[in-house]
Amino acid sequence: MNIAIEEAKKAACLGEVPIGAIIVYKNEIIAKAFNLRETTQNATTHAEILAIQEACSKIGSWRLEETTLYVTLEPCPMCAGAILQSRIPRVVYGARDAKAGCVDSLYNLLNDNRFNHMCEVIEGVLAEECGSLLTQFFRNLREQKKNQKRG
Image (cartoon, rainbow, N blue to C red):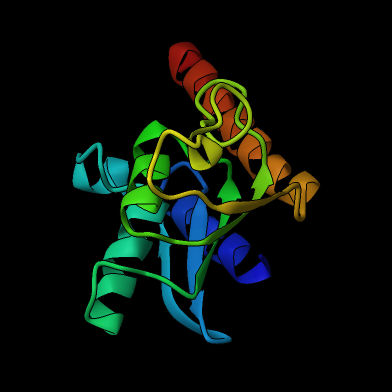
């Protein structure tokens, strides 16, 4: 999770929401990514999606069996869907997302037995550190906007 946090910090440096993700396969990191939605102006460039794309390319398959996805924030519905579609068996995340989280907060997509794949989910790993990255990022953003209105 510490490496995912480092990825999230890279996003923050670019003015992106600080979310980072890594994918581990057989004890080796095969993909690292961070949010690039503002940079690309593409709604699908979430950290998880980018990491999944990189991992599929490295493995040479759309099936990411025997992998673990580590992500700093609970995945949204799009990312949870991509996790299911890529057959990732284990997801570890840091902070919950009360507004868009679809692993535990709003929905439980990764463990809905109506789908043909389910994931082991481990939540709350370094949750305070992951959450504080987001809190500080949005606090700074609000402060910048307030200063622009004054200036």
